[in-house]
Image (cartoon, rainbow, N blue to C red; front, side, top):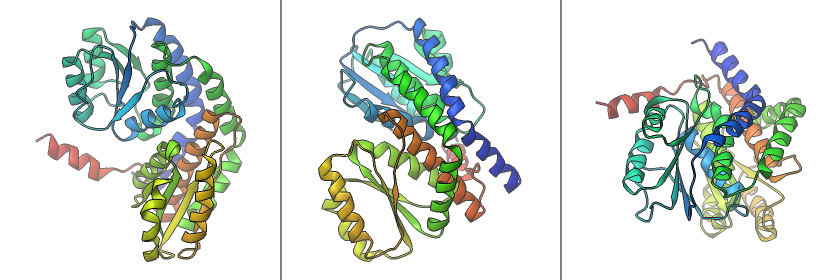
Length: 335
């Protein structure tokens, strides 16, 4: 595929993100009407890569709303405590993710209550055969570009089991409207940031409760721009990694994700950390959201990050769709 074609295709996926969210709300609203549910004491969400990040972000967005604890698993195995009063949410865009299917097999052995989010594959087939709750989302695109579909369904699954109310629907609508309204501004900001950090190793920081947003941005930069980068969260970063910046230089850039929900102590730590890191690199950048609700602000930052990764791919002249090394890894594992 020609580079120009790949860039145009990725651009279209990102442009469609707000519309994906609107469609996802319609899908989730209809799907959970057919759910069979029982009381649960805890939730386990399993997913990898572009399918797994939705669970991390949503679990942090409902931190103060969800009635029971939520645990994220990105592995073949599940905790021993999973039982018949555990809601086990399996997320796999392809429906064939090896680790997710392995964890699901263990969850079934533990008699957990199963719900799935997928576009097809073995996961969809298993749900059909065993009458498990399942929300099917549209397929045919890279998993990381289906975030608007996948993440929204996480809210609906939690609502179906009575763990959160429907407050999130209005906030998701607000987010989609905001992203469409501010599309030009977001792209301009993203392009400027990409231009500044294209020849650096980016380091992404957030408050602990927003770490999912940092992970999403890191993943997008990894896959779309083919760049190494890492992330950390505050306040923990202040107790170790901050010292490591003594070895920093302008070969690195630091991106700080801010939200109004940041603890005042953490917000102060961020400002002090920026000052310290600024001694070693002049590429210290703030990422601030717009929006009237927490969910809207989170999706604003996600969308901004997606555009940053796109413009980094443009700056570096790399194919944002190509993931040959992951395809190679999967083919070797299948032997």
